[in-house]
Length: 322
Image (cartoon, rainbow, N blue to C red; front, side, top):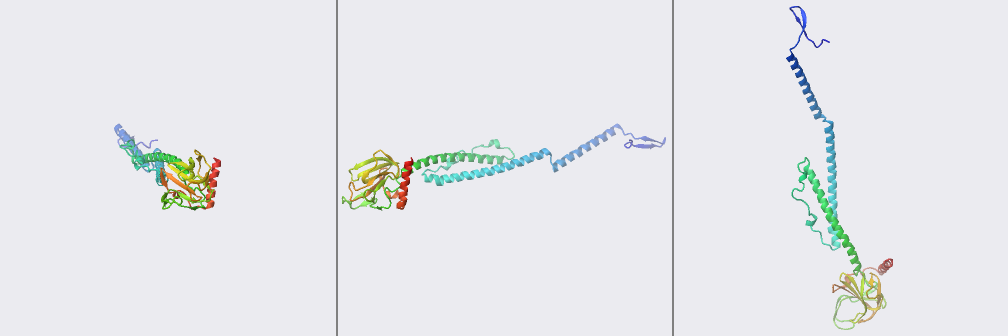
């Protein structure tokens, strides 16, 4: 119990006496011991944090790393979205709009809303401001591109519906079976076969037997059905809309009345030899906005008779389903 006490031999009386330090020295020694302990503690804490870090810091560092990973993955998704939108834009400009005869969307409109002074000012001043601004700008680009593309596809869908209707009204098939030979085409004839005078022939003749079925070449409305005193004899005129009319002349029989709506492939009459004609045949004529067009440019004359017959039957079955 006395191990921390110190004694000295007093030679005057030959007795051991306890050494007692003055109060100030004892206080100073205690203070120095305390300061040494504090310093050792600080050194220990510093070394521990430098080597291992505090649990809270470790947790925060892990959260930061997770956020960086999520931002990296989000950046990849943004880049992938931009690539897909660019793919949609190319399809829009290269495929759909040219096919549907639509104007291209100006680049200035596609890029409208990009940039701007201090557009991302609220994101400045952070440790990763450049990264935040980059991702935010990509999101704005994607949003703008998606909006324009949505508008474009809506316009394309409307045009596609209109185009399908227009396509159904175009005179795209032969009015008679393709097994029959073509007669005089769209050309200047130095001698009319009946009148004997030079005259322009504004249609396509088909050398068909008397009573051959004649079909409407596109959807439309019958605007003339009867006798024509200008040489066509019994004739039918169909208005297909879009400025296009087709004429079927020299018929022996008319199967449709004026005002009737017809579909492509519908039977409208039989060929004959009425009017100014030198023999049984069909005169077929196409006019667009008052201008005569060469009918041979409107239909495919390369199909076989079987294919033509199958096509007419398909049109007829669709008509019955309607």
